[in-house]
Every structure is written in structure tokens, then in C-alpha cells.
Amino acid sequence: MEKIIVLGTGSASVTENFNTCFVLEDSSQEYLLVDTGGGNGILKQLKLANIDLNKIHNIFISHKHIDHLYGLLWIYRFVDLSMRKGKYNGTLNIYCHDEVAKIIRDQIRTLLRKEQQLFLDKEIFINIVNDHEKVKILNYELEFLDIHSKSDKQYGFKTILNNGKTLGFLGDEPLYEELYKDVENIDWLLHEAFCLETEADKFKPREKNHDTVKSASIKAEKLNVKNLVLWHTQENLGKNRKERYIQEAKENFLGKIYVPNDFDEIIL
Ligand SMILES: [Zn+2]
Image (tube, rainbow, N blue to C red):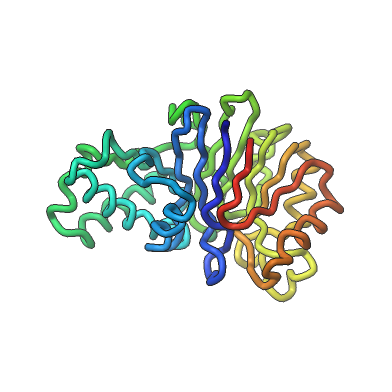
């Protein structure tokens, strides 16, 4: 059964939730990890989600912001050690755009010990992907998409799931007009929502190139999206976040709305 295992749902400066990242599990129970959160906490999130890191062979990093990127070095370090112990079968493939690839390579070269760099480009690969490039990953053909970020270069992707439905992941910025044609009529749209529209004066999402629940929902409705997943949020509402976000989304979007908590699973 294909699903999303949610490892984190928070925006950058959260303390109660983990930064937004998730695992896409295909129909053969293989994993694609999408973003890695802001640090060592990714190892705990994977452990609590019962995901063996030795079984993760594919990772996509959307952009260079540290709430998405900094977990990767910890994963790299774990996989390197596992490879040296003979516990990791196969290769690790990291997918990202050129700027992120350079940063990852520089960090490995400057921050890790020489012996921790031996598998780089031999068993651990940093694969540069381009806008609209299609790459076979797991049972999917992923089409990477430049999301036309208003700050730093950022990629998302879309794909056809094994069950025939379509899914699009747009990183942590609003859905911009350039991508409307890519996500129109899509079955699953994974979209950020920094806060409620009623909290916009307080959290100022637009100054940070983020969206509100209302604004994301209006666009999803206009583009005939079937299922809308909202995450990368504030955590001021605590346990009420799910209910309050769904309430605001419902006023503007007629499809199904998901506001997951960390460790929720979404059956696709
Ligand atoms: Zn972010």
C-alpha cells in the first residue's frame, strides 16, 4: 500500500514538532525520504516511525535552508558507518538541484573525517536534477520542478503513483502561477501553510515567502486538487492545529484536507 509517513510537520523554528519532512513509501515498501529536517533529530524521527535507515536508498532535498538540509549530514554519517560495517546493502542516492549538491559536497569534504568520505561518489551519490527532468526512483518516474522560489532556488516534484493517482510536492513556498499547469487536477497536493489567515498579521507569512491555510486552499480549489495536505506550520495552536487549519481550509476547498501530526501516515 502506498503511503506517506510524516516525520515532521513544523516550519523552521519549531520545538514541539520536527521540521517538515516525510517518507514516500511505494507499493514495494521502498522508501524515498523527502527533506531531512534540521539536524540529528531526523535519526530519532526515523526510529520512532520504525523506519530502518539501512533501508533508505533515496533522498530528495528540496532546497538549502537548514530546516530541510541539516539532517542529511547525520544520515550520511550513519550510512557511511553502516556501509563500513557491511550492514548497508546497495547505494545511497541523494537527489537535489546544483546549488544544493555543491553545498552537500562542500560540507562532506570540510566537516567529515577523511575516512568518512571514502564512499562518496562510489556508494553514495549526489545526483543533480534539473527543472522538468524525469528520473526513475523506486517504482516512480519523478518529474522535478523548479517551484520558482522568491528567495533561494527550490525544487519540488510530481509523479504518477503506482495506484495511478498523481502527487505533487511543492517544498515550503506558496504555489506560484508558473506551476498551475503542473498541478491542475492533481490527486494529491503537498503544500506548506505557515499559519491561518486570521494569524497573518502576527506571523507575517508573506514576508517570509510562505502561505496561509486560506490562500493555499483557494488555489487548490481553483485548480481542482482532490486531496490537499497542509504542513510546514507554526505550532502556536498545539493540539488544536489540525481542527483549526481544517476549519479554515474547508471554507475555501471542497476536496479532502489533511493536516497531519508528526508520525501520522497518509494512505495515498
Ligand atoms: Zn522550511
